[in-house]
Image 1 (cartoon, rainbow, N blue to C red):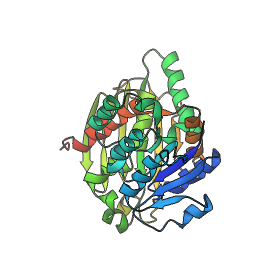
Image 2: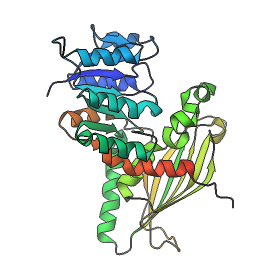
Image 3: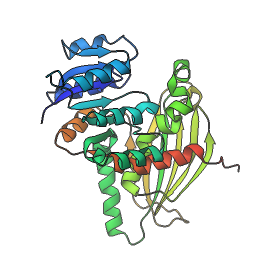
Image 4: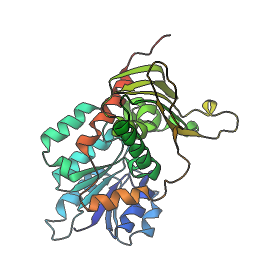
Length: 315
């Protein structure tokens, strides 16, 4: 399979992981787009990468490569801001490119449904970067839950997800602080964990939101045989005086939903190690035609959207 790449959002926070992954699969970086021209990092990966700050010129370049007898990009890597993902995937598919798409795939379930309806081959050509599914502890957690379900007559799980990672004033000044463009904390911080929850426990049954603003989102999600309490925050006030992040995913097997007596030791997944090279694994699988397809992210996108618009529970 040919491996020529163009990256949208190459000046952003996550782009270096993609550039490393492209190099890791012996890909050739031939094009990049970003409104910011502070992209000197490109010189580490390519000596002749075409660069654009205007999307119109970038897409003209993509569409004319074949007409001019030059190799075009086989892959468009989308690491642009969240609200642009849908549009950039569409443009890539219009130009017969495969896509590696940063999460969240989209901000609304209807956008996902429209993509799949309008582009029948989208699911074969778009791979979503939910890299936590490749984390060794996430794989171990998936297997641990599956074994219990196979051996227990009435398995019930109690899950606590805490992800408090502080961000300074820049965060709320940027597009990430704008709920309309980013989806707020549940999409910015939470989409990773919602994807893991849906992957491990299936389709959610109900949602209760106890707090939701530009800094926090807390609540309870019910899955079949599982209750999840989650707390996500980007505020320094949520992490104590030392400002140290709190990042933990704890799964307990209990004997009954109502008595809640724990059986054995809980499974604890801490987000402080094991993350190196996960984007590399995403790319390696995508080059083989494997990975997370668009229809697979319908559940976490639907869950995040429901949390975003749910009424706040007043206890």
